[in-house]
Amino acid sequence: MIVSNRLWHHNRSLFQEQDIHCVWQQRINNQQQQMVAHFAVYVDGSVKLTAEERMYLQRVTNLLNVYLQVHQQKEEIERLAYTDYYSTLPNHKYFTTSMQSVYSQRKEGHIVIIEISEFQHIIDLYGRDGMSRLMEQMVKRIHEILPEPILLARYDNASLILCNDGSRDLSHLNMPILENLTSSAYELKEHKVYVTLKVGVSKYTAETHWQEAIHHAEIALSDARKTTGTITRVYDESLKRNLQKEMDLLTHLLEDLQQRKLQVYLQPQVDLRTGEIVSFEALARWNSELLGFISPVEFIRVAENAGKIHKIDTYILSLVLEWQSERKKKGLPMYPVSVNISADHFYYPTFVEDFTKKVDRYNIDHRLIKVEVTESIELNDMQRAKDVISELTELGFDVSIDDFGVGYSSLSYLQQLPFREIKIDRSFINNLIDQRMHAVMRTIVQLSKDLSLRSVAEGIETPEQQQKMIDIGCDIGQGYYFYRPMPLEEINVILQNQ
Ligand code: C2E
Ligand code: CA
Ligand code: CA
Image 1: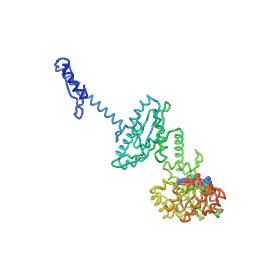
Image 2: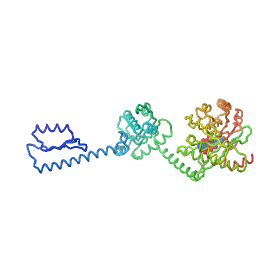
Image 3: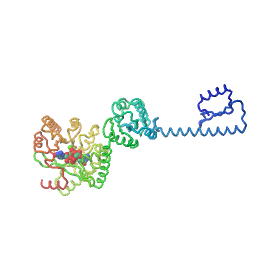
Image 4: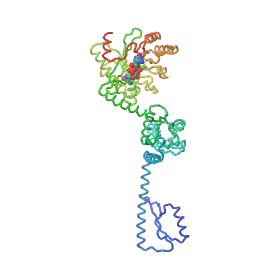
């Protein structure tokens, strides 16, 4: 049987020259009736086939026909099984199958997962086809920069996976390789698209199987996602330990939150001149039965990363409201309380509505609840921030800018956003002895006065700091020198004696 057409013609003339004659010849067609092969029988000299022999050869031809079709279908199925559905790239299955033979030959190399951060936007704008075209272009660039043999495949919607066999150290797949993948645009339907990449890298060895290395690269990738911009993270054991710790912490946190086991502490804010308590800041406290005392710095971050921070903020708000409505019922003096709201929560589409409903359910005057947003809140969506703050202000909630001075554009925020209060960060108070810092502080306090903002100095720990802040013209102080954050029962006692 001859499958190639060229060979067929060549052989035929060769046989004719040698006086070898064709006694049987049949085309073999595929399902689309295209010829894919010739089945022919040549005999030296002249022979005439009997009817029986013809019948036999016809049967063989039929069998060959079936065999060829099955073979081609198998090839097609294999091609489909190893090719990505949307693109021409090899897929995940291809990668894992090929890795088996790569690993059996050499037990050392790197696994790299490259993820395109903007993948969701790209799919929304240009469809899955668009995303696939972009990935194909990226693969081409990778092959240009890494000419040595590498195994490369599409890993999922957003990422590519590659492996080299250890001949080049890919562990620091950073600039300039990534530079090449990100510095110029990809072309999609007459549009130019720039991308940001997160890269997770791990090593496989005789001890660490490649499958485990893929898992490690995933862990490194998750860690890379925490940082903005294009970035590579190389796996090390501590990443896995931290991840496990974070997962455990989050599980316990959510359970305890559900069972209302978190507490709220209030820290008094005092009139700097008289020392009289004028308001409070509400701070979350978590004393886990299993993990012990965990600082809010830690569990707030974990909750933020997991997208669960609104649960904490809302819960703390209800504890504050319960406390206030208790005082209201008893006819006791009322004090404004500030609650901390994380950026994610602040930008939540129904935040203002949910927040207001909650406060109204307890029938508490809006002026008694303040919203603290930290300055490091990504105020990059200036218009949205402005809208939310204006809405809150119109509803009677004061909005306070926390940790003022830590970010870079604090002063421009002040002008553009309708805050009612600034909280000067503790790091400034700590450095008051520094002459220049003193001058900066004075300017900040003066500016806030000009803009009719209340200024609160955070983290006052000494009488000298108190005096300095008074001299500068600051109104309110908060810090261990006056009061530490305390449970509600202690606050009630202090207020009774005030
Ligand atoms: P923050 O809003 O800047 O809160 C002030 C932090 O400074 C509190 O730490 C407080 O205990 C501490 N502090 C107060 N006075 C002094 C002082 O004189 N010296 C020193 N060294 N520290 C002082 P805490 O309670 O550990 O809270 C840490 C951060 O956790 C808070 O920083 C806030 O960003 C966040 N947080 C706490 N509760 C919540 C919450 O319910 N929701 C959200 N989203 N974040 C919260
Ligand atoms: Ca705060
Ligand atoms: Ca603060």
